[in-house]
Amino acid sequence: MHIAGRPRLAPGPSLVLLASILVSFLAASAAPTPLYGIYQERWHFSPVTTTVVFAVYALAVLASLLTFGKLSDHVGRRPVLAVAIAVQMVSLIVFVFANGVPTLLAARLVQGLAAGAATGAVGAAMLDIDRARGTLANSIAPGIGTGSGALLSALLIQFLPAPTRLVYVVLLVILLIQAVGVALMPETVTPMAGARRSLRPDIKLPRSVREPVLVVVPVLFAVWALAGFFGALGPALVRSLMNTSIVVGGLVLFVFALFGSIAVLLMRNTAAKTVILTGIVALILGMLVTLVSVMAQSVPGFFVGLALGGVGFGGGFQGSLKTIMPLVEAHERASVLSLLYLVCYVGFGLPTVIAGFLVVYAGGLPRTADEYSVAVILLALVALLGLRRATRMAPG
Image 1: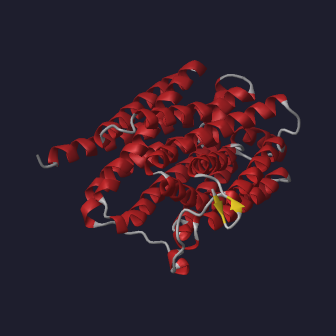
Image 2: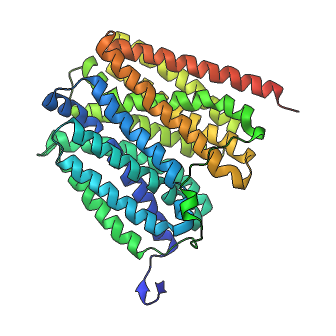
Image 3: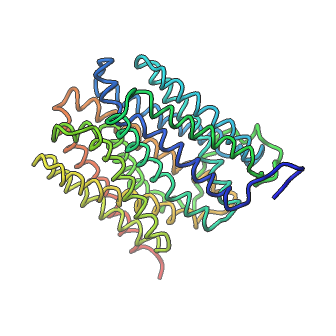
């Protein structure tokens, strides 16, 4: 396809490109996870600092989603993507030259802002091209990106030189290639007026979905709190259970994300109630297995619990969206989705910081993991009770 004499990517390659960008952004967000132990040794900071660095990213993503989430509707997908890729590359350069906690915090902040802006534009562009395949790509690409980023980082650290720099250089090259692809991609939406007005966060909860939202909020909070804990402290927890290689630590996020993506893929055509119920049950079972495994210092058991937790995350998140979004009018979707993401990213960041304080001041990492598992189980039980109550009250 040619437009004005310049070659443009066809819809199929454009969709693949967009999915790869989403994978790259999530891989970049996960790449520091196996490195936190190295940073901690070099710069002598506590697990509290690790969790704060982790939470800064979550807050930046949330702020960016709420502010820039609808901007691409008005200025076009390609300009927003081009700027987001450029900002993400800046964050990676900061990581390459990071020499302490302040630069680490700055890199995570910039990275989160880029990721939030890109997520909305990429997701919308994939739906513009092909609603069915775009929806599927939106569901599974984040898990693939998160898992592959953590594993790639761990492998490069273990087997190649420059452990705190190489993974970011590799990601920089990938993003540069993708930026060229964006330049060749056709615009998928007609720009319209109101760009400045779209920057104002719009969070409203229609009366018609208030009860269903109350049902899914504990699920969303629990599964994202679990993702945050494993992302920030999972590798350190594996090392505390067994003095093992950094690659095994990198497998924590990979296994969690892989099983989350598999759950989303397998249950994409399943009824919302079944999906969310499967997620809650898997979450409870996963946390029980994790609890027992940490007490018994069993690494294989821990990874079984991790896999079940991943299924819980995929089912809980997907089921929550499938429960709420069909009940919302078209003009209310962005606002309601923003509110749900607010719950997600507060769950992603806040409990993880609390866990960091508990590690340092209240008994260490294994004990904190036990307490965190119990808290997630209790939240999941609250969600299960709410789901049963909602089912009994449903008409028919």
